[in-house]
Amino acid sequence: MTTMHFILSAICIGVANICIEWFFVGFLFHSAQALTPQTWRPESNKSYLYSSLMSFLFGALFTLFYIKVGVNYVLLRNVWSHIKLGLICFACFGFILGISNAIYINYSRKFVIGTMIASVLTYASAAIIAGLFCWK
Picture (cartoon, rainbow, N blue to C red):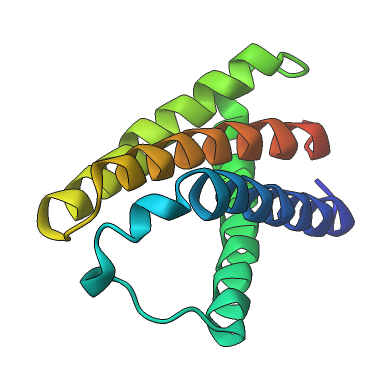
């Protein structure tokens, strides 16, 4: 993977993550956040900026993970293989973290469902996107 492919992969994964999170957490399940008002900090442009930067950092880190580890476990040009890698990453990282947080933090169950859906789609799309930019 060239440097340009790495950067493009990180940006594309970041944009996909922002869109997925907005749709599932910010649009479909946002009303569930109102059920636990004491849990949330006020939203602001600063919080949106930090969240977006975290999405791009996730894109860079996932691309790095894909180059160093994931590429050895997927079939090139096989979307289902990349989706399976994304599902494994979700199960190891997103699912465990999301459920652990929900145990101790007063989240609405609907909100947790929304974040789980967003997380699984984020990992699957990240694996697909990284695969599109990576050639052995």
